[in-house]
Image 1 (tube, one colour):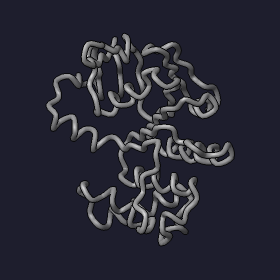
Image 2 (image 1 turned 60 degrees about the horizontal axis):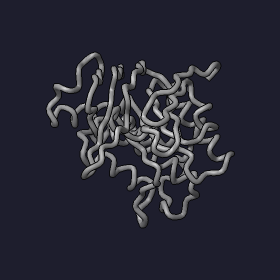
Image 3 (image 1 turned 60 degrees about the vertical axis):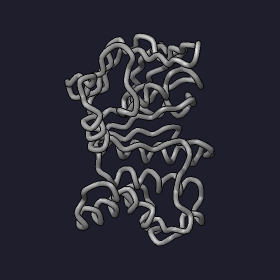
Length: 227
């Protein structure tokens, strides 16, 4: 589904060139639960952006569903991103003064979903995340774990195939982090492809496969047994 062939990314900053990715090669198959692990500056977030059609490689080939993405026009790339991907970023961004239901409805504002589809998908997403009883709660009254669950519910309610999440357990304690990772595992078992980006080995080890990045290079690609 996702294939990187000798992908490199070069950023030019004034008189300085930074090679964020260096000849990266890997394939992600449909319905994998995978983590991209690495420290700050390792290239993992650059890879996140390229996979999700937020950025483009400087060199090499990115194949998506066997199509060379370099030939896509900007509108085509944006359409693929909107149809296939949902993104969750490190910082929890929810609108205070609005309920859980109102926040999740925002995810549908730019997508063509019928009212019936929307209500069904939102209800399912809330049930998956175990927060259906919080529907009418104002988000500022929720715990950080519950806010994170709302953020994920809003993403999976869109019913795209690929869920990409940056630092899912950011600022959470170990027990809450483990609970959230179990939620992501449940989403994966429903047939979704889940891609986690993290600096934390403990989080990465709860996924089915680890791509370890360092200094822009893919150092190892490890399949996790029984994950």
